[in-house]
Image 1 (cartoon, rainbow, N blue to C red):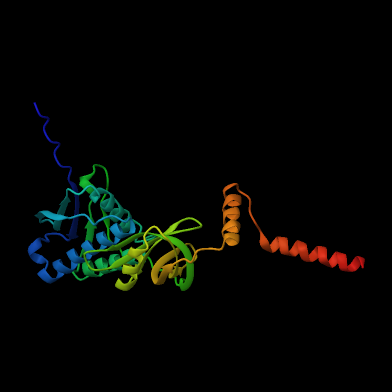
Image 2: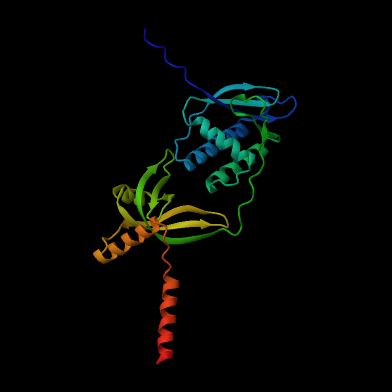
Length: 266
């Protein structure tokens, strides 16, 4: 007999505009629309951080005793994004991208306009877990500044989402990667250069703790290196792989010291 298909696993998360005797009829359509749009935008921002498609959430249940809205999703990535949403609310956006923090602030403002607190319930009604309440995001580091620099990398991704927001993913030659915003012209150029060595002018927001990728200003295919420069680069990579640190400043200082001693002896 053919085996029965496994039932789809649902991820459930609920929010509630909390107030004694408050019901869905007490929340205006405009306030509800703002609240749900802001929640969806926060999920989309978190999905973008993790380079996942945002989960499709459906309204599964509406109840009173606080205006409570329960959402469900069958998407595989839903549990991961819902978990990220829970953590983001709990830590007031700390450690997330600027886009996520902006949307979390938007959600908080939408909740404030209802005149009541917004309660976030545990994912799938997990037993023993207590609900948390939405608070304003922690203020962003005031010392953060923007900087523009040129990076050497390979293009490993060129994407555009359902809102026509383009992004380019670069894997740096010296390790790590960054997901940058881009206009459509740059997105087209990047798509033609996927897998190829490039140089790109990019913008970062630098703070005390981290560097956040912002935008690609221009991108072009890297010119082939001369055989001499290619040999030097290969030697540098080989030394780095073996844990050998090449300190050019120290070597130059030693050369200058030797030259000075030779002059004194004369």
